[in-house]
Length: 527
Image 1: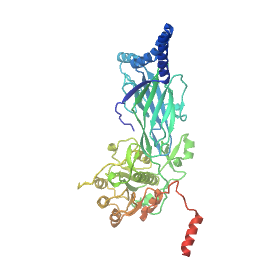
Image 2: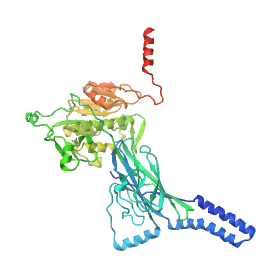
Image 3: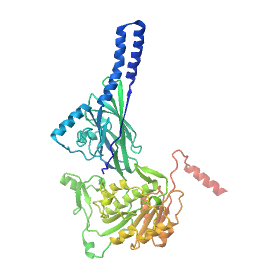
Image 4: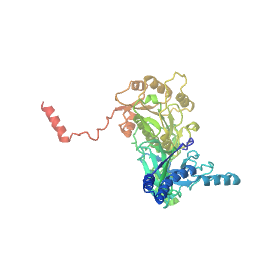
């Protein structure tokens, strides 16, 4: 999940410290005393006190200290509620060493070192060039060469700790997305030892870490320079799927009438299929007996001989989600759309774990994003038990897209369903639709025998007119709010229901006790 980043903007702000201003004030006092008393020794002291901060400022301006700042996130993709470790590394470079390194590189030729793919360079502070995100720290004088060690186990040793101590350190102020935690003020050694802190996301999406401000001082501590590095690092947060209840009339019905398939043995303790554990696999699927036998974590793999299929469509048109806008990191969203994304992840994982092939699409007939793969490169919509985790991780990039209602005769969703012959049971997750938009979905799913729609509406919570369009076409309609339980909405897809769950009371609101409610009931009965 790498993204090309523009060249980082570096702003430098130099100023005197409290010690520097004290030096200047003492120089002025000594100069006045030398003039009054006529003492040359006091005049020499005045010149010394005044020249220290001035010469330090001149040295800072001439040398222009350069700081190579590298940020890495482990892991770069987490599930909502899980923690991630952010490691900061700092190396100081001077303009003279950079010039020597440039001349040496010109004689020796260009060399590229391997870099950690999970690391994101924040750039060179102090007037140098920077590379794109995910390319490691880049030297100002030699942008093609990475610098700094790769990610080690020291990155994972807890919040705000350094891999080794160093006498020289710089202060770094790290800007953190409020949905990840608070801003961090850390002291990072310039030797390259990592300093880590922990973030725990509270919402799905793509969250940014950065920019950072590095405070660099002179050896005397009289001048400090604030280096603002605008480079940012992205942390991808996938939704947490919820456990759904298995109901009798499942929407994923059997296709085909081959009686021999029913005679095949079902996966059991003796013939269960396993595979190696992958990052993101739920721990409930770990097969402990196979893990002990192979010496590594193994998870259950469902029987691939099943032919059950279903279609899940997630509506991402911004016009169909008119609720108040919220930000899923850098992605535009609404609370209702976040509910739909979580429901889509839950349904996909629930069905794929039960030997069902799910065709995951958006409202334009395109495959849902998977892992790090670009959406434009995805052609196959089939989601099996092996690829369900990738699709759930890809939902971290789901965002609302503006698609005004058009009068185009050919609908991309209809074309996709007809071209691939997707006449399986269909579940649509959408918001507050207009009757015209509802008729579009009805036309697209005309070949499907069983169709269900979950409409997540915003306030005011009333049944939309488009629900009647779906019901007249034989669809099972479930109208919910963002406070409705996902499992309750899933169970209602077999019969249809209106589950307009009200919002929870405010934390400070007074709650009626049971005896008070019974007293009110007796009073009404007596009256």
